[in-house]
Every structure is written in C-alpha cells, then in structure tokens.
Amino acid sequence: MSVNANSDASADAGSQRTAAVIEAYCIKNELPCEKTITPDTNNTTYIVVLPGTHKLMTNVALSIGKHSLTINAFVSRNPDENHKGVYEWLLERNRRMYAVAFSIDQFGDIYLTGKVPNANLSEEELDRILGAVLEYSDNSFNIILELGFETAIRKEWAWRVKAGESTANLAAFAHLAAPRESS
Image (cartoon, rainbow, N blue to C red):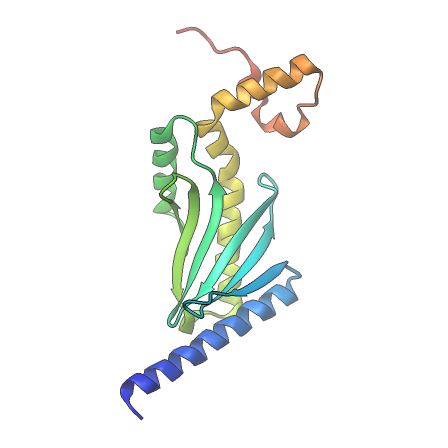
C-alpha cells in the first residue's frame, strides 16, 4: 500500500468519524439537521439550525472535507449603509472570537466562517463551536442591523406607526424611532 493510499484511508476514517460526531450531537440536542452530499466532490455537508433570541435562527453549514470541517453561518445581508462602521465593528470582534470569524462574501453578505481539523472534533468541541456561532450570530444581529440598516429601520417604524401596525418586533430599535437631533 502506498503512502497516499494510507493517507486517503485515514482521511476517509476522519471524515466518517466527524459525520458520526455531528449526527450524534444533533440527535442528542434535538437540533434540526439536514445532510447533503455534493456530487462533484463527494463532500458531506450538514445544515444545522440553531434557535436564537435576537435572530430567530441561524443556519450553520458544516462541510466535511478530507482533513477538516468547514463552518459557515449566514448572519446578515449586505448592509444598506455605513459599511465602514459595520466592518470595523465586526473586525474588532474577530480578535476575541473562538473557532470562527466574521467574513463577507462577494455580495457583501456577512457570515461566520471557520475551519477545524477533523481529528480534533468531539461532541464537546462541536458544542463549543456551535455555541460560539450562536452567541456571535445572535448577539451581533441587532447591532449589525442598527449600524447597517438604520435608515430602513426608521422608515419601517414610521410606516408602521402611520398605518397603525404593530412595532413589537422592532422594540429593540425603539430608540431609533425618536427624531434625529440636528447638528
């Protein structure tokens, strides 16, 4: 047997073990989880749904490669305004984060992304990683909205008040409903 054959067998065993850890974790914690296999790469991806408080839910894609698990979680669409302020806020957080970091895609949408070796993944480590993803996604959501969508929030609030509609799900942004002070 060649070195490459041994390496491939080891990688396959690591990938299978990682898949087993993810499946066991999701079952144990009653988390919705969908498994897909990418035809061209034969990589397995699990979409795990994490329930949130500020952000209703966070979908996390856990993609198993030969040697590592890639983590991707959508946080917010591309901000409408104040990109510099949003990106500075995200970058300041990145230096204090565990296993994942904020990133943007080619459209400017905000994600949490990370990569960990398959060999290091246990249910305890997966719990830490998914806990971190949930904390960062959920706790940053309203701040990202406030920084990057302030004008839209103000307009939505004003429209709802004028139309007699509920502003209950905008309560976290009530302070934006007040008229801006002139400078």
